[in-house]
Length: 455
Ligand SMILES: Cc1ncc(COP(=O)(O)O)c(C=O)c1O
Image 1 (cartoon, rainbow, N blue to C red):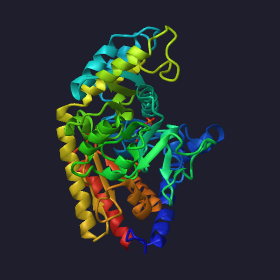
Image 2 (cartoon, protein in one colour):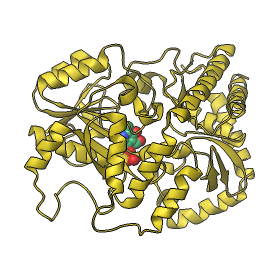
Image 3 (spheres, rainbow, N blue to C red):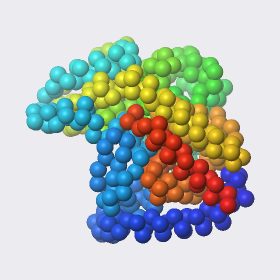
Image 4 (tube, rainbow, N blue to C red):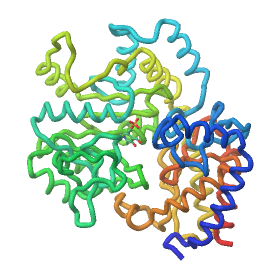
């Protein structure tokens, strides 16, 4: 019996059975996967999609609201929402203006006024920043780090252990067993440079560790999610984020909050909800409502320093920005996402649905006396984890309670019964388009899965 309370033999048996069920019901997906294998690396357009849901890929025909349909004609309640892409698929309030925008020509050499509207909308939610744009969260972070280095003239970025901020080299490192900074085992094309040359790592929720590392005086920027969401879910302990703010000011480092995931926690993310005061704010994924987009904003005082120091030569600046970053279509996506989708009304509904789902999962976990917990709920993000209590850092989740085989099986089981969970982090994302009944269906399937796991 593993720490999760489920025998590995049972996981194997059920995975074999569920893989067969999946395959038998999806001849067109199988054929598409075979075709894809011949022309796409790993048989998928994006490396992270390989092998995440079933013995071959599930090819999607369409999505509407909180539902998606595969090419074999199966409909799913979608609790993955394109991995944080949009609150509701193909929502007319969002899609119609996007179509209109395309009629104006997608990309032009000089700016469109929508950029000013987007910046104003972001500032209405977040305070006084000056903004620039990318096509994803990775580049928003990468360029923010570069600019932070430029301002502070310091080399390093500090992150919590097991943070994920995209494929930015400096932050794709982790503490090994000895507490040394090292690359992930699955890291691709590991650079010959010494891991950690440009990075410091501390445990999340550890202010003493943070102060010790900042005291070296070489940290340009402390980069973190306000609540850690990759792998497990760790909320800040009382006083932690205030402590980070104080310490970064004391040691002259900038504080960057990355809300690529946590933006799903409210109309202005956790920064708005908790009244946080970062120097730099970044987001990707959902910020564009489905359009590829990322944003990075610097507080005015720093933005002014940047503008003063980095005068434009007319040839642009080397090291930041790209041809399509901040293009009209991305900006139109951000604008209509922020104004039509990221509303109080939608998030009130999300809170209700999320609470219903979290209560449902907690009830099932206690019914079967599993050593797991559900929650804490964070806006649209509903989670359960294979540990009795929430953890204060990701390191504990990774070392003690992570079980990829069990997570994979549970997601496959749900998928075979019409519920698509997020493939990662034991997480469901609740769309405001969902109904109470949709939540009850998903919880019911989760219950049946738990029951069978214990048979
Ligand atoms: C917190 C965080 N920041 C940044 C990123 C990178 O975003 P993207 O995949 O859009 O580059 C991710 C991706 O999962 C993320 O979780």
